[in-house]
Image (cartoon, rainbow, N blue to C red; front, top):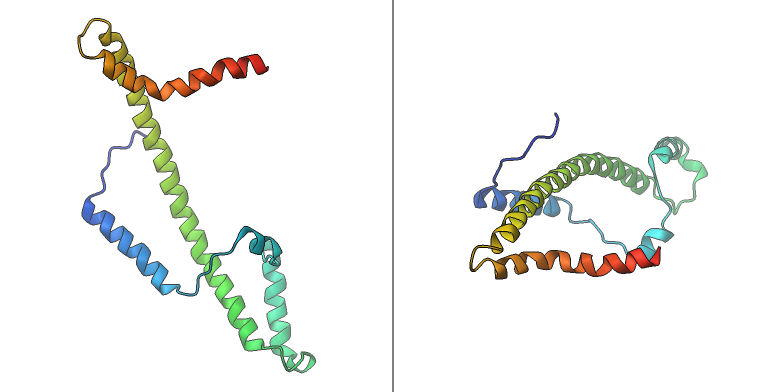
Length: 158
């Protein structure tokens, strides 16, 4: 569906229900971990290309337990693989939802910024003749002061 202006609201009740649903997801996945950047870097990664390799390894381990050391826990290996495939499926769904929320936020934020720029232009124009709007125009203009301050520096740096 092509993007069109978004006219929607989310009720306080819906917000609470959505947050509760997210909490339910977290409660259903109590084993989730948070890794540091260093920990993430050190781990052996299982990407899409490795899925067939791991699947074949699970089959090989289950079919040939006698060649593996007694300390190798095949059931734990199978459980890890099954959890990895389940989490991959869930993550795909969550990423789709996150992408939609992110795109919608970008679109509605753009709509709000465009409307704000229109209001700012009218306030600036009206402030020249309408008493009491100069302070408001200056307040709205604060958003652009940092940009104006950086522009000459960026131009001289080129």
